[in-house]
Amino acid sequence: MSLGTITPADGLTLTRMGYGAMQLAGPHVFGPPKDHDAAIEVLHAVVAAGITHIDTADFYGPVVTNELIREALHPYADGLHIVTKVGARRGADGGWVQMQHPEDLKAQVHDNLRNLGLDALDVVNLRVGGHDESDDDPITEQFGALADMREQGLIRHLGLSGVNARQLKEAQAIAPVVTVQNLYNIADRRHEALLNQCEQENIAFVPFFPLGGFSPLQSDALTAVATRLDASRQQVALAWLLQRSPAIAVIPGTSSVAHLRENIAAADLRLDAATVAELDAIGG
Image (tube, rainbow, N blue to C red; front, side, top):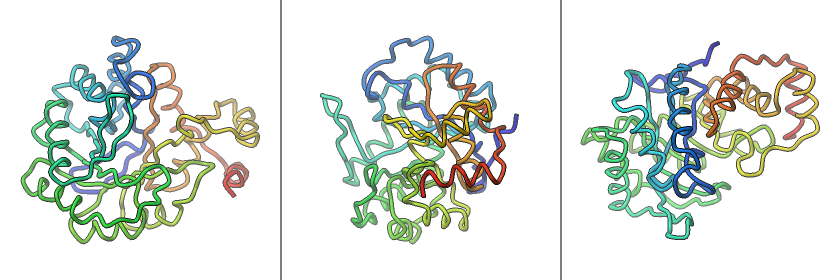
């Protein structure tokens, strides 16, 4: 099985098949997992499979996923890269609260360091916009605060989440950007141009909600292809992403070892040109 790799910066090689830890928390990414031992088992299986790219955030739970990752995997294996995000917190009701003040962003970095048990974070993504990335506000002050922490050695690499091309350029004028996380999947390709730019500039493009998120992808064409290939719809959608661009690294999440293995198997699913064209038409 080949998980593929991308190296967006010296010392940062990520498997293109990664793992998103969001679903380890309770319902709606809030509270503890239904089965604590099962969550630990999933994380062990992630590393055993050779995945070196784990995506998390201290606002998942909140704190829950980071504490699970630390419990299961600390001290971390050489080459394992934990990618986290800052820019939001959770309300007492579980709501998502955007928190972008530079001092709060710095506090969030320290929260991630403490809860993951690290002296430095491999990659920190600044979460800028929501799922539609319609916010075009300047990000110099916020990204600059993270760049300062990079200079201090608390962060090794910086990324962005929920941004447009202008904001990416704005950030790149401050410090190198190694990852961009935006909404992108077989049915929603509004960020096609940004993906192409990332490919040209060797930036890892990491689609969030690669399978549609809380509203799973629904398509007769996708179902037909999956049936023909004796694969799941999720596997086909992941395989399409991996073949779409060498810059794409996927981070499907699950709280089940069986589902994890099913996702990983998508890395070996090859789609011929005719099948790719058939699937391309879904988002046309």
